[in-house]
Image 1 (cartoon, chains in turn red, brown):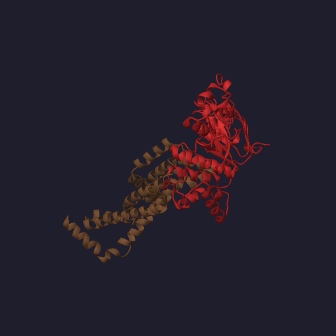
Image 2 (cartoon, chains in turn purple, red):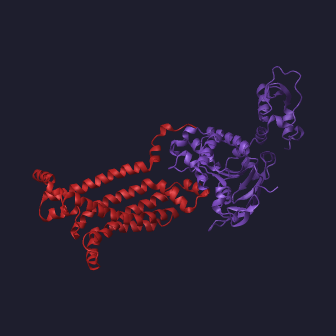
Image 3 (cartoon, one colour):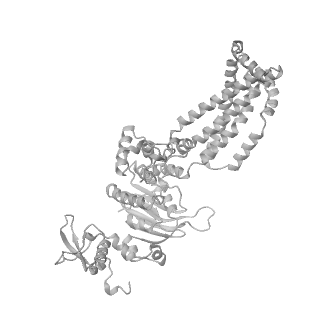
Length: 326
Length: 235
């Protein structure tokens, strides 16, 4: 199947620069997935994103959107078909929230009734209070502005959404909220999303696949979050990921998505976890309660199995006998 | 001085001074006609050029240089140079020789503010506009100019006040505006007349200034928004 977005040997060297900002980068992003571009400052992640909507033109290589080279598209058409969310939201200060959201539909010449209906729909989708529609951006908090930014980007229902550090300007609590909302949103709208972030935990949480970039736009590894944590391809990736990789893999995997043990013979006095909870929660209960295993319960609260330390360990592919070398 | 004030009171309450081509109303209208003509011409040059240079984010040094030169040129000197030329080429007395002098006066503040206003628009706002597929002209007209409007209008306001004040010079080349009261009052040593001209110009200037304040408020309701932080949410 043709990927939604395909980068083929894309390089960028800015005029006057002595080194590449992005070097020979090839990535496939399947339709409906979230791809995170992560790395330190100067790794070319934002430049890569800006090449996808042609705010920056590559020096060499090509970028295909659903099989069509984006250079064959009218640049303004391409951008109207591509949602774009940036760090400071970039809302138009002189326009109300409703008018901000309606920007692209208006550019596309939708009639007023259709625009109004779409705005109302989006407000619900991103979790904004409809009362805010008549206000100006200066009257909104950072988190509200960011939600408006996402609604504005989704207004014309673009298949592709580009997000450049969308949550780095809001405080950690609001950030976690917005991340959860994005996951929830993505379950409903299934966009192809490219997310630029310097926060590896944000990438692990939100992305289906992660491209780790080093200074100069060199691709160090392109893998799923679990693969990345299990087998970092280089010391750079390992260092970038940080500590407690096994614990973080456990955090990514829900209890119900792999093998579990039988229901323990005696369930009284044992902690319980739901099938939807991450494995890390089961481990936490075992450690906190000082017990051998936890009871796994279904949505209705009835026991469906048990999880002990060995099973949990095997779930992330580390048998105890291999623990010394892992 | 109290004598002069009493004479001034008599002068402006004498209905003869409110009638005819030499009366206060006619001269006020003429004064405004001259000021508006100069302002329209100056704005037509200064605002598009300043906004465009701000949009391309170039020419900062050139802008500053032009503005400084424009500010340093004395209006009276321009008037003195243009007056004989105007007579020779059939543009006559008064109105036309004065307009270019006022245009040169009005351009620097409008040009500088249009440039600074557009150039100073938050780069994130411009980035978002471009990224959403607005064409360069749309970015300028729909985002940069409206966002820069408070500063642009401030430039127009400053220029208008300078033009209204300086338009009094037109009396020296025979224009029948409010400056004529000052010119005549000075030559006839009629303090009441002189004072009438000065007060009339000041009144016109302050009235126009007040209208500008209202206009700016109406044109930029969103600026009030930032002054209402209590309505901000928490998430």
